[in-house]
Image (cartoon, rainbow, N blue to C red; front, side):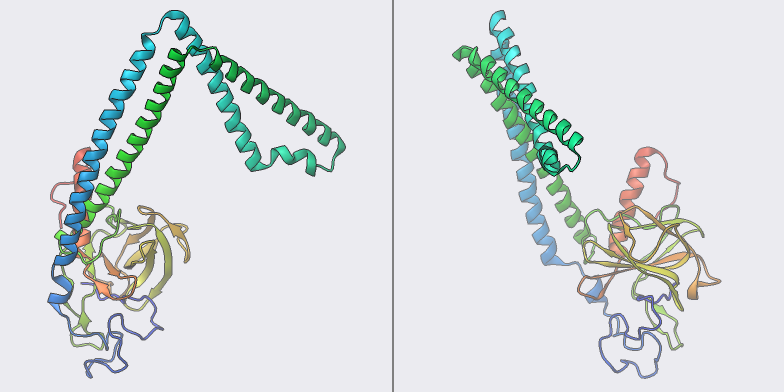
Length: 369
């Protein structure tokens, strides 16, 4: 379907994957004159080494999660035992411990507040004020705060010293157990996030993708269909004859388009083949080309910073798609240059989107690539 320019600027003669000064086919003189012959093996083979490495990393990540879960379970048991030991104290000891805990919380709250003040420079206010009245008020205020903090510190120390050794040790055991439990929970969260990231890599390589983009989302938000047309002949018999360097996602005109990852919009402009088009340079370094748009979303300009899922345009039929079925022509290019087949990554993202819609009961029947 689509014959879009992969680099949406007709003033740039360099073809996307050529690299030579002379056309590889002397009968072609258009934008794709230096495009090399299509090599299905190079573009469509499964990256075995990368997949094996990702699977090995997945095993390690899963082991880390198991270890972290065991650590959380152990920390929970230790914390429960420490709290039980405190609960077994007699009434007077528990009352003294509660008073000491309240004094500690007041002191720690004041310490945190003082830290914030130091960061914003409140303590230095009297030194920089040029207004005598404001200087006096600020001086009194800072002195009062300092005296309050000294009082809270004395109260905290006195309350702590009033505890006998048994109560103090049990209270310290509770604080230590709670701290260790927080750290264990944080480690489990980190391990879970790392596992999800590796699972995403394995899934991408298993379906044949040559790139992995964390959090990649499907660009078309609505009913659509697409097939793997990467490498198919386009504009046969014309100066722009070439093989297809993207995936055409068929959808109704006006269907919303979104950013597939966080990044910056580039070349928000029209060109002869791609019509209304744009490029998104993702934070991963990959570049995504959207072509044949009906219009840009409100506020879309070159240099705009976007987050994945942000609305950036609408499906259309501009450029050389005029008069044909409306669709998005979508390409992915590596950070170092060179086009890759976007279909495997798109299909993976689409299936995840379908699963999410199924969970919400919102998917239209029969909408599949």
